[in-house]
Length: 437
Ligand code: PMP
Image (cartoon, rainbow, N blue to C red; front, top):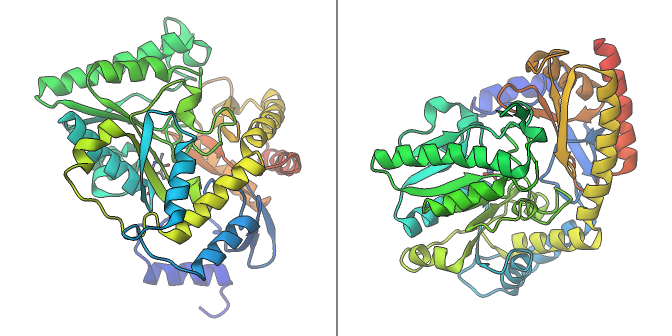
């Protein structure tokens, strides 16, 4: 190991110590030591622009969140078997952002746990077992949710009780000669509702009653499909008509990211039966939630005890409250809308010059930049990966998503600024020039 640079040494060490299922980003991994706002620094002091991390939702190490954590951690940390004002206060506050019908909440530590619980609640309420997800969905790493995460590879997922419907690919799905992006929400929603109905009816033919449609309303791992706004309405109406419940997985679109509403489902004008979220909730502390209509929760919670050792603890609740306060005081929703619009405009200028950018779509600070073979809609994963690596070398961090791994996922902390858009544009210009595309 003598003479190896520190990153190479660390990678060799990791291979000896950590389970092999871990995957590092980048051919040349990044060793980060510090973060502030939308910026990160590596061990050599090099500054990076973060265009990827939605967990540090109000910015890395936001001082108000750090202070709230520090104060509560030095006072007390216990669990939800004792009364504590932090959990009650936060529960009320976060429920006030949801539709009136969704009026009960339970806390967990990860999005996986929240979805796992939501599925159990849905199955108990409906008496059914069948759950439907989209083709490239990711909903978690537990035994139950990994089976509902075809993004992990369908080999280990799905079966008779777990079914997929196609990705709502607004770039490619053709409905009577119109591609999805130009469809009305009614037409696109009717297509999707029809796909859902086919799967539910097939399950029922196999004697499996329908329990739930579990979806992230921005279809993040599918490749980010935010519109036409309202297309989920006919789908959720169909779910209810067929006797199922809708679980809105808000891990990705929730907490003001879309710029249009606090929650992703609100953009589409639908009311879920169950809501789950996690990642952006406490700016980095492991905290998640499952909210429910009380009548949907009742049969489960009325009979089965539920305890989550760390879920809802006073320190995580203090972090969650501080994060929510910052979202309001700094108007992250308005910022996502304003800066997201500026970001999109900047990207459109690139698209006009670079035919490898096939489609741009997004809402607020959630933008997908789809890389294709010029003049076609054929996914070009290799070029997308080359862009990703070159951006890293130009000190911009992002990632890819979608079935073909050719879609740049641009999802920065919600405090992303106009200066950050300029930094990105400079790095993107250099990147595309270096790659000659
Ligand atoms: N749902 C969605 C939509 C997600 O993106 C993720 C995580 N990427 C999860 C659930 C699982 O969350 P966690 O990793 O906190 O278990």
